Length: 217
Image (tube, rainbow, N blue to C red; front, top):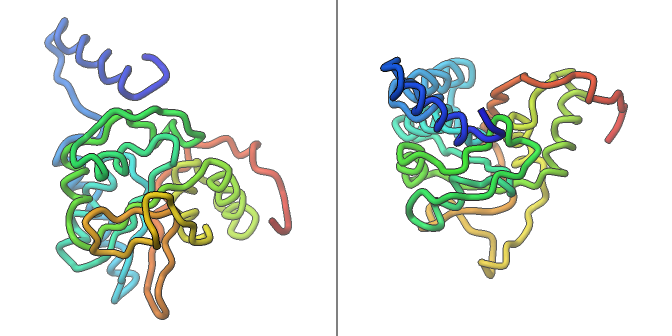
């Protein structure tokens, strides 16, 4: 199947074409996104007055959550790993583009190209794009285990890292961008005073033996 989702997708298309078997995309389908979007409804039931939801960008989960959030006026922080930032690159280019896939979180967030459905969701108001670095993803994953005893895959830890990271400037801007800018991207997201934030920990397909026991990071 190859090392990337794009290669698995090509194999699926070839098999479906040769056999006539029905084809199902892993994330680029409106019904898949709609199903994932119901998660936001559950979060809002548990956190009345939710202001912001932070979600790593893998495809259908982001598109569904972002669409539901738009309906309810909830801000979305869309988190890409720096070394496979397909959505972030598409926002900058204004269309889906191919990106390298070279991140510790590539097993779950390793799309070479974002879907148009996800890009459309990201281009709406109140969406903030964040890029996080691999070394920081590793730290966030370890912190979840050390402090909460929650074992997650690196893709889930990427979402948390968007909140843990210190604000950092990007050479493309003279100042940190603000939500509502034409193309909003940064290296972290800093909630305001009293802002009610939920972080979606979207997967646990991980090897727990890679988590060390540390009392303090």
